[in-house]
Length: 265
Image (cartoon, rainbow, N blue to C red):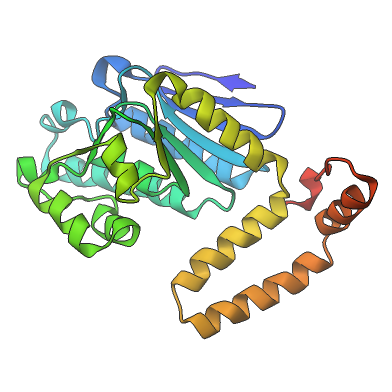
């Protein structure tokens, strides 16, 4: 399945259940204009509400996403600027809240809101020469779509402060060194790398992946003792699930498991 529109977002779905959302406005470095932001929010919302096994975010051209379209924003009045920022926030938050694994491929520039989109994904992979940063300090602003909160949680407060206060981006290679991305690979290998990762994720139990994600993030928001209780409760559900039964059968029969979409909750 593939859908395309003039708003700069292309959505495709593979037979394996990978929903590929591509930011497709290369002439503007995939900057988030009003129409594109709304289309991106719709794509994320529909994918998250469906039975997708993986959501994959990519960008067309030499950028992943250059952030908010400042050329377009300059023509807005104050109310429109605030509404535009709220829309970007809504899209990023919807991505963060998606119950299935989310992956992004940072192929080039990921600045401001583009970096915040990446931070909302569970797994991040970058081209070695990509440029990634929260650059709002350059125009007298601060990150406005979760960057001040998600960046410190990803790499620690000290490094996050350096990136946010200077507004200076880092390369994909450096981002991997500081834990901002899972790995940095040669640019011509990035698509193949993330496609392979997404394929592996899609082959796993959808209910298991959703449960693990919920327990991990839920545990990080509480104490270790409470997190262990979350894990124990989740495990009781997993041990009686159809996917676990299929996993045991596949192991005994020495074949790959066939986890069913019906197991997604």
